[in-house]
Length: 212
Image 1 (cartoon, helix red, strand yellow):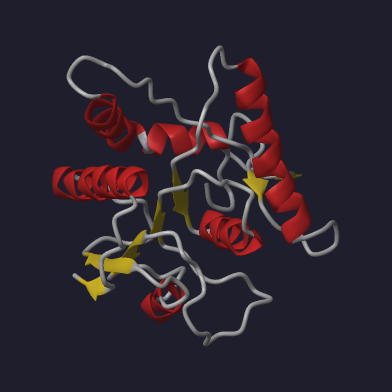
Image 2 (cartoon, rainbow, N blue to C red):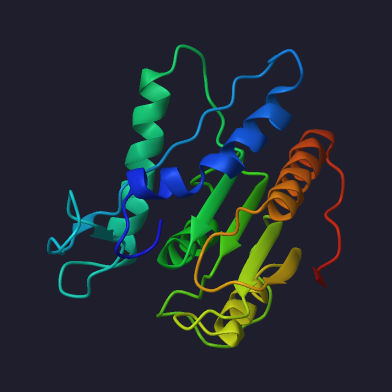
C-alpha cells in the first residue's frame, strides 16, 4: 500500500484484481489455493478527519527507513507461513506508490522472497537513497503502471523505477494516482502473472522490456 493507506484499505482497492488473479491462478478446479497478504507499513500516522483508523507510512526519517519497511514485510510473510497448514510460496507482489519503493528494496536485498515470479507496480518511484539514473539491476519481471494524470508521482519518476528492472512492461493509463483496476487492466495483470508464474516453473527466459 501507499503512504496514508493501510493493508486493509489497499485490500479493498485490489478486490477486483485479486478476484481475477485467484480465479486464473487456482485454475477451473481450484487445484492451487491462492491467498493474498496485506501487510501494514511500520509507522502509524496521525488520525485524519474521516479515517476510522490511523493510516500508515513505510518510511519515517526520524524513526528508521528501509530496515523497518523490509522488516514489516518479512514479519507478515513469516506470520502467514506459520499460520498455513501447508508450505506457502510468495509468487508475486502488487504494490502502489510508496509501497513500490519497498518492493524495489526487497528485490535488491535478494533472497528475501526466493519464490517471487513477478511484480506489478503502480504509481511508484525509486527509493530516495537510490541514484536517479541507474543501470537495470532487478531481475524479477515487472509490469509497471503510470497515470497520465498523476499529480503526485510524475511519469518520469515511474519511468525511472521501470528502468531499474532488466525485464519490464511499462503501461500508461489515463487516470491519476491509483492502482488500475478496470477490466482491461485486470486482464493485463492476470496474463502477466500467469505467464511469469509458468515461466518461473519451466525456467523460460524473460520477455524483453517494452512500453505500452
